[in-house]
Image (cartoon, rainbow, N blue to C red; front, side, top):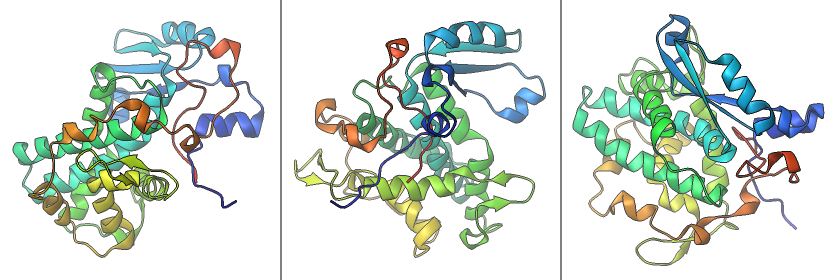
Length: 279
């Protein structure tokens, strides 16, 4: 049997390498920008994991300028934690190419969020809806942050993909490697989903045109940055809502995400797997 690429989340990697129980490992996410928290601006965050530690730790961290909520849905939050960096690069590219056009950015937001929702449906049976804090975390990352900054620098010609994903003064641009990782996993022929228009079974990447374009811009390097605008302007593009209209039970693929055996202490969690990805 040939090995199939799949996602291994960092928290699961921590568990595998250290032996720390999964219920003792938590994920802290936005909506926020780290530099603004450092400057003591008001911010929110979400702490995800088993209730045993999640609830008391959220209460411990909560303060006047940093309100921490707690949530049990690890998969959706942590997969979105990786995906938002992918699509933030594209958001920066669009902003740079269109002189920060609100209309262009809103069109991009519609398509990118539909792709993100589609991917979470592949990985979780009942993902949390992209609303409230989860949507806000996506919004702030697409609006501001190192990945969006990087995309804008590419669009304006101040950086090139050939220069790599380590940028002086910014550090690692996480979205660059994440683009390649998600593209590789979603291109795997063993994973098939029904096309929302034709019903034909296709690889998931076929329903993610923005991700495809970003991969070609950043890794194949056979497309210019403005190819992303061509993707948005495709006359054959269907309503992004149709991408996520497929019944969830026809999208969910348990083997896409490496998982830890269930634990009685994790019953309040949608699954035991968590953020990021490793191929």
